[in-house]
Length: 499
Image (tube, rainbow, N blue to C red):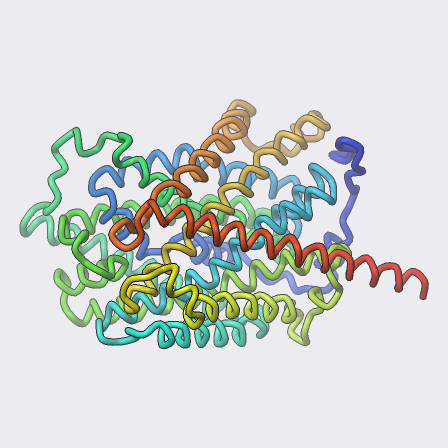
């Protein structure tokens, strides 16, 4: 078979990375199709975000969900699937870019992709706080209380994340099944409410579905809903068979699309304009189920969604830790980050990420300067942090997602014959993705930076400053840290050669 190896702009593209050989020999291959589907859903389908999109846009949010799916989500899924089939190895974007563009760009792309996923640990844990506040407005009013709960969630998920992979994944699988059950209940509630009193949101006015400059800021938020297609592929070296790659991306994508459309339609039908008046919009899913199907269903659903916001930071932590693991094995980061514990899990990397996430939480929720910047009522801090963190995550992830398409093009250009031997999509589909994908990413970056997701709490005037500042600070700290880590890794490698 022809080789996909070569040289890119003076850089020797490695024929095989050390991590590609090390992971299969040292880590158990235990992840099946449903395991990867569960990771995929946990990383992408934030059920509370459907309420936010419905509240922000009304009927036009459905239009944006469709546009986002066609112009952003599906190109990312197709690129992820094709790259995963060509290089079914641990590390996803890091591995693919090393193979496509060389180790320098691979390390850069890996770090760019790793950073927002660490922020996602904080964002998901903050969603846990937001839902608790939805249960009772008098709970977790003070910022320090919110911060303590988030730190507790991060600590508990860290302990669970360093256990045997099969044990941890069983917990994730169970909660994802329950979450999908909530989506089914949401669909039932929508049908029942529609048959009883029709839709509280008029959907027969064509003008309400039209995209325009006034509602265009919603596009950046919609893109957030679809970010994370390659998160499960960080663990591709631990799957039981390569066919798991295509299967989990197919079924996971269908479940995510169905989940977002069902929940958004249901909220528009059942809650209508009342969505915009709720100070804790993500909790509206529970409010809807409570009002239509009864208090008991509402309570059960609230517990399940709280469970989702517990396992989501867990998934982001253990999946993202594989990026540090692979870079460490390939001598790009200190060896300590790649060490496995007795359960064959990269515990040091997971703990390191938790410490970073905890430090960010301490700065935001306990440091006075951060409170001054965000301003407003202390009780609103969790909502502000949730949206600000997710926006910063969207900004960086959308930019790093461009590497999906650059990698795809580079691999194709280097050896077309070998590429076609592993190609699973028609070339016109891949070309469409290579053209549309990066363009959409740039639009998302601009839109996210310029338009506030919560204008009633943070105006556009301050939004770009806060989002841009957090993004710039995070990238700067990551760049400095990577320089130190790379130097340490080079020193360790030099020492091992001398020995």
